[in-house]
Amino acid sequence: MDVYVNGQWTDRDSATVDIEDRAHVFGDGIYEVIRVYGGVFYERDGHLDRFERSAREIGIKLPVTREELLQLLHEGIRRNAVHDGTIYFQVSRGVAARKHPFPDPEVKASLMITTKEAPRPVEAMEKGVSAITCEDIRWLRCDIKSLNLLGNVMANQKAVEAGAFEAIQHRAEVVTEGSHSNVMMVKDGTVYTHPANNLILNGITRMRVLALCKENGIEVQERECTLSEYESADEVFFTGTTVEVMPVISINGTSVSNGTVGPVARQLQKAFEEDIEVQTKEVKLL
Ligand code: PDD
Image 1 (cartoon, rainbow, N blue to C red):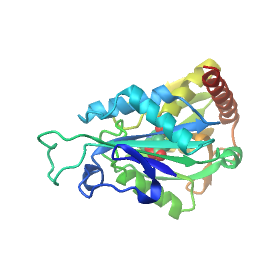
Image 2 (cartoon, helix red, strand yellow):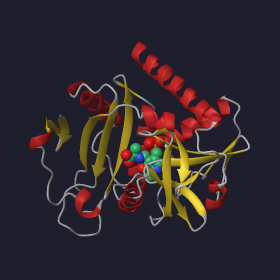
Image 3 (tube, rainbow, N blue to C red):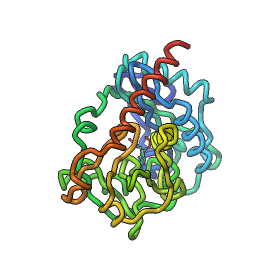
């Protein structure tokens, strides 16, 4: 696999990163993951917008223009012949002696790009998955797609150790999101999910799924829901670039509703699949 690092493409095995890059001493940077279907980006512009926003929010000046970044992302897909997979890209505040304040004088931010071939999680989406709940211990700017993922890593590891697919995080009684996905619940036909504020990442898939709800006449309420509301929901599902619309059939070992995938999740999976087809076909025609 070819990766982009230090301003050039190089083989993954010979790629190196400076020991004083702020990405790994402070997690001082931001990232994005874009899904690739049939060699074509899905929701590309939404991810690029969020990437630029994350950089702005933490005062990082991106080392490339949007057009240059786009060209590099296309180059990554082409070089590695990614068919169904993801492209990962991150920018850190650059290389400087380890001191907490931003480097002064300013240094050039470091851009890194990698790709991965990954099939769609078809079987898990068909059957549904299990989840655990855990306390959301993260900082108060979860809206920034920061490289600091320790809270997310700890939550995901708890899920893995419990044999579950994903963790549903909560602050006190309020459900926020998954460790690498957003979470939604359905009650009496209405889809509920946490409002897009500083306590969650406003997922590109989240926004797309909420738009698909509206297009399909499904009512949406973006409001705080409690753990007990989730536990007595008709349906629960995760959304995200890598998980698409992933139904949750059990939480902490107890079935959600009757323990099977519900009709709203099924309807949204179908709408999502159609959306992938439409978006990727449109791009191919351009
Ligand atoms: N994670 N919330 C968190 C904490 C996430 O890390 C992600 C995505 C999402 C879903 O966002 P989107 O729909 O834009 O992918 C929500 C990526 C895929 C990751 O870290 O690998």
